[in-house]
Image 1: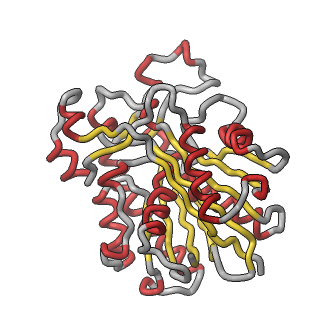
Image 2: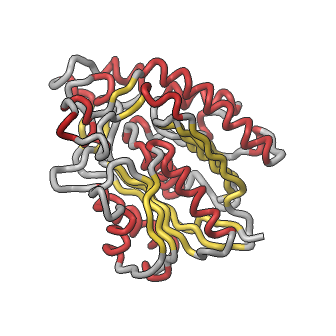
Length: 322
């Protein structure tokens, strides 16, 4: 059996940092309110003229360096993003050109906060079928560009960043299984209403920004992430105790705590970056993975469970031996 094995991770955060105290000056909120409800203390925001592909390139190069690969050895690029630089070409094609790669397939995946999990699931299938041997999978967002900075319900939650992994075909166990789901019936709870087909000129300015009914999203997310944990373990005949590390989407510390309780995992075995990153959407999971790999927490041979939930609604998981 051919497995997809993670051989490199990389991350990048913009230099500009916005703290909760900075937000106190522009919206009706407080540091205490934000921390108690979300666990977030600061987030990184892309500078003017700094775009999603810029972040993706830096994360990708870091992942390639760890894997010991040159860009031209990559034969598949999948980028998960909701905030593409252009309508087309895809951010993946733009990244491909930046890296000096020509020929292999390159495309974007859009599943919002579940985007990286979706992209990794797709790339894994390419590896398993022999269609690719070395793939670069990136989650990158400048989510700040679709925030209304007068809306305290959303602007305090999100940040910009990029995370990446290199996966390679291997006979040794790597990605064990992926599980991807969606339910478009919940579209109205978390969305950006505007879009190319509808015509930007016919929409109110507010419809160009994220809209979220936070309490309702929270309830569905907690229940759904609990189910995806059960599904993943059952599909592989595993027990909760078999998981060494939980790497959740970094949306909200309360959701992370609830998922950890469902898995019966102590918080010491959960990778948490939400305090410093905020919710970076598709970049969230690969950034958290990279942090824990580089600080030595996650070691080779350990079993990791990555899971995420996002607008759509979309949700999914990746179970892997690192």
